[in-house]
Structures are given as C-alpha cells and as structure tokens.
Image: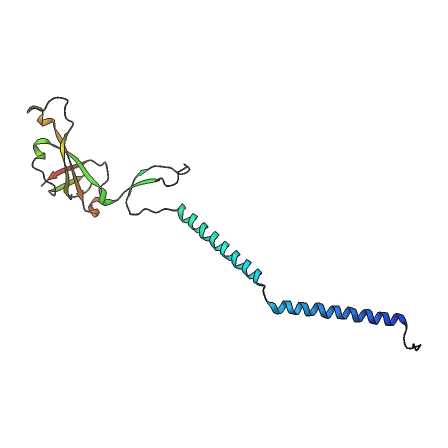
Amino acid sequence: MRTGGATTEQAVDQARSARDENRQRVAQLTADLETARLGARPDQIAAAEANVRALEAALAKAEWNLSQKHQSAPKAGLVFDTLYREGEWVAAGHPVVALLPPQNIKLRVYVPEERAGALHVGDAVQVFVDGVGGASEGKVSYISPQAEYTPPVIYSRENRKKFVFLVEARFEPAVAAQLHPGQPVDVEFK
C-alpha cells in the first residue's frame, strides 16, 4: 500500500540512482586500494630486472669496444717506423708503428778477416759518435761464423783480405737510448 505525498517518484529514482552510483564508486575505490596495497607486481619486477641486466650487458660491450680502439705499447721505445698515417684504414690486429726498445738497439759492424779472429763474445767495445762527448761502452754479443761479401771465386790467400765478418755489440739500455739507429760511428775493440 502506498501513502501519498511523502515524495515524488522522480526523487525516489534519483535517490536510487545516487545510491547505485555511490556503491559503484566504493567498489572502484576498494579495488584501487587493493591494487595499491599489492605494490609492484612480480611480472613487472621481473621485466625491470631483465631490462637492467640487458642494459648492463650493453654497457659492458660498449666499454670493451672502446678499450679495443685504444692500444698502448707494451714497452717504451723509439718509434722506428710508422706503418700507417692518419686517415689510412688499418685492418684489425695490424700494427701502426714499429717500436725499438733501448735493449734492442745494437751496433752492427763489419770487421776485416784478420781482426775477426782476435774478437770474442763478451769483449768490450767503445763507440764514438759525432757530436757526443766521450765513448759509449758496449760488449760484443755476436760474431758471424760466415764471411760476408765473399767474391764468387774459390777461397785463396789473395782473397782472404776481402772477407769481412759481421760483429754485433749491445749496450746497457741507458747508453743505447742515446744512440740513434743508422747513425755513423767509429768503433774501437778492447
């Protein structure tokens, strides 16, 4: 049974509509609150961690590539030869310069046959360089067992004086650093 005059039907419909709308709003806010309480989802965490690992691997590769573009000499030394100039293409793994460390600088001199017999490995040698005061001291490190510049004739006493033997001498690195390859020198054997 209905009693009249309490409210209009339109007001009742509006009240029901507002009630339903408020219930939906409460359900929406409850769902949002549950989502906020969850924190980050496990799949999002795993994806972020995978992304971090991928970026770290890309960084490590970029650092390695950069380190491969810059090379340094294993030892200090004189630049003996430049194999490529700026702007030229160099294949991977090819040297750009040839270095000559001081311990590899040596004297190479040809000694007449009559003097070669008196020399021994370890004998002292003095080298005089134009423009440098004093002698540089070294030691004979090698005497060739074969004659050089041999004439194309059979060995004889007359040709013996034409034979020369290669003799090499080495120096302490500090002394060798002051000598220049190809430089003419005067040599005295002790």
